[in-house]
Length: 517
Image 1 (cartoon, rainbow, N blue to C red):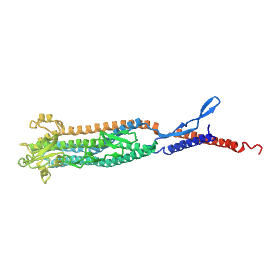
Image 2: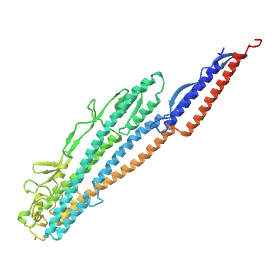
Image 3: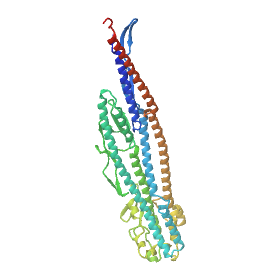
């Protein structure tokens, strides 16, 4: 037989259920602007019915409602897509930033870039070829040569600074990365503890997923959830977070790189010393950006090597004002005619220039590139080898040959000048110096534009995934306000019904059976 107060219990359950739903609606509304928050919902279910006898047999009478669970609206498939695409977006963003800085280092939009300096240097040789005996033209050649060499050294220094900046950014981001993995590890422990009773730690899970969102900006992540609610985060086959344990990423000890005049680093796992190779994200972007910077640094080194070898070789074939005292002088680098014949060679696949007993490569070649001291000294203009040996002082035939090195290919020069080394290996290859620089800048522009295009496309992909996630987990004001009215009405109706039942029981208890008193 049902209890006399069974109806009251039914209404009380309804009041509690609607009150919890209303509280949850308020929680959703107040967190509508909270980053990473997922809309929550109270799942309700009918309580166990009671068996009641009736004239036609037994019937099951409902006993009200109860809250089964409180869950968050989350689409794990959208999350996985977001983590994957965010890594790619961060990679392109890091590369895009680096290309912007490289383009600034090679800025030819004004009169301070390498292109302008090279054109001015070339023009000075053209002018000298028509008036080789004019002292002012000789001085101009030296000055323009200094400016050209300084422009190459300046761009190389900017690339060095950019590489060092990339390493420093990487170091700072590794600190942030380790802080994120530490927080995820702690949340794993807290979530497992809170959910051991069967409840869902929704707000903690939102916080953890937001941390994974941020983590995916640095590396490519794969997330696996265990039966106890803990996350295992794997990247490139290595479990960086595994339940309540984690690995720490750091930069390795510096490795001196004489070729670029700086220290190189790699990402390693602190606990094991194993090198970690990121496959995506900003970490991969930083490492690829450094390699990209070194490639353009090599281009500058090759240009400097060409000037120290091929250009010097042609200059040494000519003579200055006084033939006996000015033959065989380098224009760039060391001026001593004995033991300072620069030659181009290969060193374990690295471009290098050898000068005497020393082997120069990379930054050493660039630092060597300055107008030789003998030309910069007082009266040095007379050593500029503008004429061919045996010709008059006004002859500028060798200046003509030197000017051809800027715009003619190696085969064209060989046809133009039988004395040129047609088959000699050159640091810039067969093309002219101007073409070599132009091709490098064209490659830079194409690569930068390609990254910009890919970055824009990736931004659109991520925006679509964000909208996909938001359609599931974001707080909809219209829906929440509608729910608020529904639960308010439900609460009021249960309270009114409870009052009515109370009045009925009062009548039954206090007013029944008083006849005849």
